Length: 230
Image 1: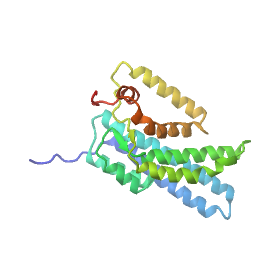
Image 2: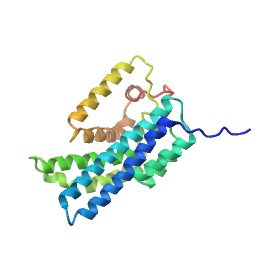
Image 3: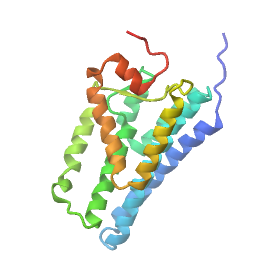
Image 4: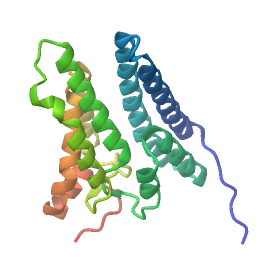
């Protein structure tokens, strides 16, 4: 039997291209900042700020591409490989390859690498906000090194994290869920200095606690299609 030719769909792959662009641009900004540190510390700090926003932008694009593909029924082998390439550039090599090889479509085994990158970027943004404002960094300045080690373990752990790629938007709960998402987004934009870090930390903690929750609670939170009722 002849195999169907792989199709390339525009909108999901545009999101993946946005992920790739943000990751590449963030890398350039970091390199520019590193080169400028000894001659122009203020400009170097600006470059690092820009890199943080590009990493967060890459996370948003990575979040959207798979969901748009599934909503339109436009998943393709090319899209999956293109998404993996973008993840390599934006978030790192080994964890991206690990998650690409995972068999589960609706969950990740281990903390997803885009979420780990988003957590590091959002915590860095929070620390910069503390340092530049009338706040005192205190012990917060020691957070990143142990957090990086902890995330390295979590990315290769056996904890299950929902991908939210199969959320059912055709139920009676769709409108309330959509309104909640809009309110959270508005609140996050208004409190962009610290709210992204709270969201990423909540996701990190959820994976640790997920196995302790009943199947009904998990279904209520994740609303995944096709999950068996035990």
